[in-house]
Structures are given as structure tokens and as C-alpha cells.
Amino acid sequence: MNIPGVTIIKGSKAGPKVGIIACTHGNEPTGLSILRQLKTIKPTHGTLILIHNNLKATRLKKRFCDLNMNRLPSDALSQKSPKQYEVKRLQQLYPILKNLDYVLDIHTTSAMPEPFVVILTKTIPAIAKKLGIPNIISNMAKIQKDKAFISFCGSSKAIRIGVECGLHGTKESRQTAQTAAINFLSEIGIIKKGKIPTTWPRPALYQLIGSIMAPQRGYKLTRLLKPFEKLKKGEHILIKKGSKPVIIPFSCQVLLPPKTTTIQYPNEELFFTIKQL
Ligand SMILES: [Zn+2]
Image (tube, rainbow, N blue to C red; front, top):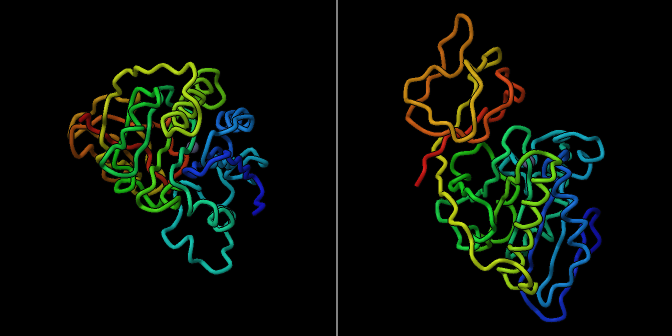
């Protein structure tokens, strides 16, 4: 099967199918540099599948073309002759995605240097704590709008993990992504452990509990927020002249705050709210 943007490397013995994905958002070059490095790896067994996901958006230097590829509609697989590039691309990749046993989707952000692991479910798989990333956020599938790309990968038993490695294109985010990818492959057992440390700092565990969205255009944040900042119940967080303010519904912490007080993507969550476990 020859699909653009996909590299398949087979080990000499049978074993799990492991997908490493980069550029689910087109403008996140960190993941691509990791894919380039991984192309030289030879797994001892199983199959390593490297996927440059949103090819067209990368070419256009954009986050996405028609749709945020991490916010796909739930009927994205069953749509007949879809018009949106990201839905077409999902369908093109699906023959490969559906068979994956393990998935690591590498992301970076524009506003949050602190790396974190994203898990769709409330249950956190053991491997997520061994990636060398200091924070783990669970319960994404319930809270986020529409469907994350990795939720289309493998069966419900597959281990599906997203990693936010820090700021786009920095040395630090490349280092974090590289460590996470190598740890992921060696913990699964398809590459040799080599020089990888066997002890891990214990990551902090958080659960997603909600998100804040603007009810309509014209709302602005009342102030800039910091990642993991604590918010008190009742704080006015979004305002618009002549409209009701948006209020923080329960005490929580901030995940992925926007970098400006104006709203860039009105159809997406402005930021997520989390609580420490
Ligand atoms: Zn991303």
C-alpha cells in the first residue's frame, strides 16, 4: 500500500503495529524532524509506521486547510466523496490507521512551553507515565468538541496517546518529542532499550473537566492566563459589551491558554479546564 506521507518499516519478526504521527496540525515542524530521525530506525520486530498527517496544510504552512484535523466530525469515515481536505486525508490513511496497536501523535503549541501527554479516556495507560513528560492530562474525548484524530486509530483496545511537546520549532520541544518517541518505542519493546534511563520522574496527573468557549463573536478574555494557573469559581473570564459575561463554573486550573486576549478560532475551545488527581 503506497500512501503519500507514510513510511512503513518492518522488523524481521512479527509484532505490534506502531504508528508515530506528526503534523496533525500542518504547522508543527517539531514532529516532522522526529519522523526524519525515526526513518533510520530498524525495529527488532513488529512494524513502525511513520505518518506525516496533514500534508497539504504543511505545504501551505497552515494549521489546517478546511478543518482542524484534531476536531473531526464523528461521521468523517462514512462521508461519501467528502469535500474537506482533512476528511479526505483521514479516509485515505484509514486502511493503515485501523490496524494500529499503538499510536503516538506528536504536537507542539504556540503558547504553552510545559509539555504534557493527552489521553482520550479517564484511564491512563502505564506507558504514558514512562515517556519522560512531566504532566498527563486524561479524559480528552469526553470534553473536547468533535473527535481527536487518534480516536480514529486502531480498535478501542489500541493504546492512543497524544503528546504536546512545548513551543513550535524550539530545541526544547524537539528534545522532548525525541525522548517521548524513543521511550514509546522501547517501552513497547520494538526497539532495544539502549541508553534510555530506566527511572522516570513521577508525572503529575490531571483530568480534563471542561472547556471555555466564546458564546459568539466579539468576546474577549478579561486577562491573559498562564498554563496550570488556578482559577476561582465565579471569575468573569470573557466579556463583551452589552452581553452576559462568561463565568468560571468551578474552581479549576488552565490548560492551553491562548496567547492573546482576542479570540483567534471562535469555533474551538478557547482553553480547557483541568483538576489535579
Ligand atoms: Zn497540534
